[in-house]
Image (cartoon, rainbow, N blue to C red; front, side, top):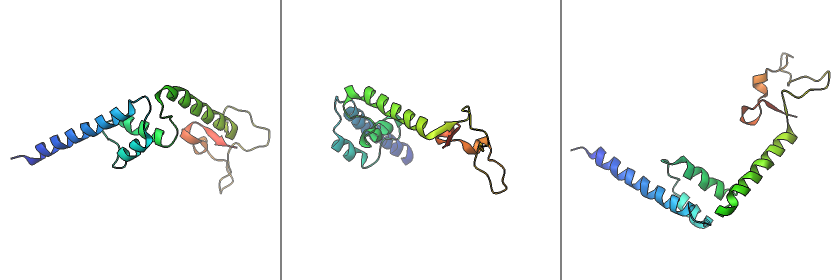
Length: 128
């Protein structure tokens, strides 16, 4: 008799029930953050990465829990990020004043390679 097949079927049923609870909670017009926190306490479902991402974004205050405000809230956060990136990073295609090194000097005195100057997300940005 094969116990692993019945065990995996039971685990799959638990996952789908768990995912269903998350889907039900996240599909409400306004998500109850206390209920979401309690549901997440034992982990987010692994079978749907979007459930995990949306849940954590709400709990961390990145995504508003009110559905009708989510698109506007996410657009605002993304705009804030782009503004911070613009203010604090200089990109490779920007001109630099004469005499300024393009990268931090290494121990041997040579300037660093462009791959070592990638900023957050590897986008070629460098801290000012």
